[in-house]
Length: 265
Length: 70
Image (cartoon, rainbow over all chains, first blue to last red; front, side, top):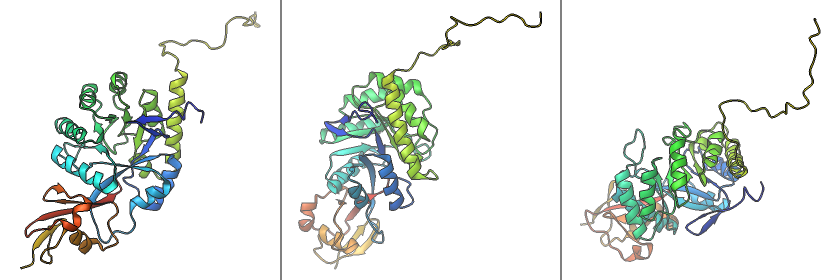
């Protein structure tokens, strides 16, 4: 909780206090979401758009308003650039925000991004004035292409959405981070707190978590754990880790080591 | 003949001359509106145009709201 850990993240000119962004999917109800939201310290939360259900009670927007967090609408469930663009335009109309977490997926089994449709949608939305934060693979080249069309950040996956498999290819994430000129937000695969710390240690600017928190046995406790992990990762990264070595290096000096005679002789 | 309009995938008979505002109200009640967005025939209709945009017979309209996700 030092000033270093609190150094704000700036995306498209907007300062975010927290480097943990909360995905709101998977919470059993709004009360559980509200508890986790508070514990997470997040000031940006995703929401999705779905057909209006006249029987639904209470709006998630009330929960988010009460917590004082900003809304990041997503295009979850879109398979084509066209659908994602219309969904983003609907979100802008519904929430009065130009920010969009762009998701264009390839199939419902992997939920992996469709790179071709993703870049097309990103380019069209940037041209239409959106602040585009695309959910992408951990491919540094694709991230670069998304930057080139004007995305405000890139959101690579650590592993598939909801898989809890952590960061399967840390080398790709670190290469992606080294080359990125926009903020990098690790967006999928976090299973527990250590995954979030690892993402920040690898150089990511922020972490987005949904399932790891919402589907935990105790979502509020996990929200706090991941919040602290993000802060810990940030502090550790700033502190500078020691190099890895193949052999031991004693931390205790040899100098002054007492010598004992062999007592049995 | 009253226009038949597909609202969120379900066909409904609505009054002659019904507007987007009228369709939203028929589905959600007058209190609704916050965080609601509408696409008519795949094009977003800005809120300011809801009262003046007529929904014709055979049209398809999608009315969406915020839900948990992402």
